[in-house]
Length: 217
Image 1 (cartoon, rainbow, N blue to C red):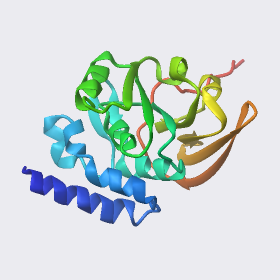
Image 2 (image 1 turned 90 degrees about the horizontal axis):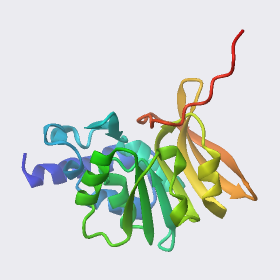
Image 3 (image 1 turned 180 degrees about the vertical axis):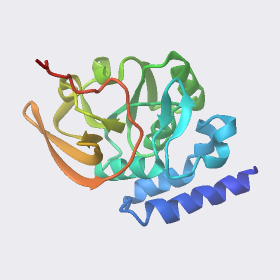
């Protein structure tokens, strides 16, 4: 499939998926219109790179669905001076999108193979760093961050991530609630983040954020 075909698929994603579903930030629209998502998926999946679903990239990880990512980034109200912690780098697609909008991106991924792939895909982007580590631990070495983007569905936001968010910082994630993924925007006040849920939306599940189960007798 040629580059012209992918450009048309990318345009169709923006027109039919993003613009029709409250992805309204012009910076997010512009960045997602420019980044070639097909370069971030395995060769056998390039023809579905722009479909409205997650795309497997191996190691039990997937790129998040474009609509879910677009809505999270729109809700984050990104600014050029933001320092962003991205949880769930996968092969680097969302980090590449963020790099066109904000000042600095620290992207965390737990798979060594995917870290290597993300670094290859993001080569030349001076404002992006890829960090290998557990997703729920974030990257304290580069904290604090003005924005944390959790690019997938989680059951809970760990205290470790809250601690890495600067005062009045924003955190966006899809939080599982009784089987439904609810997109949420959190704002930090003191040591607490208060969340506003703004949409139900599908997305890929990120590992390591499961709620601890209580004892049963």
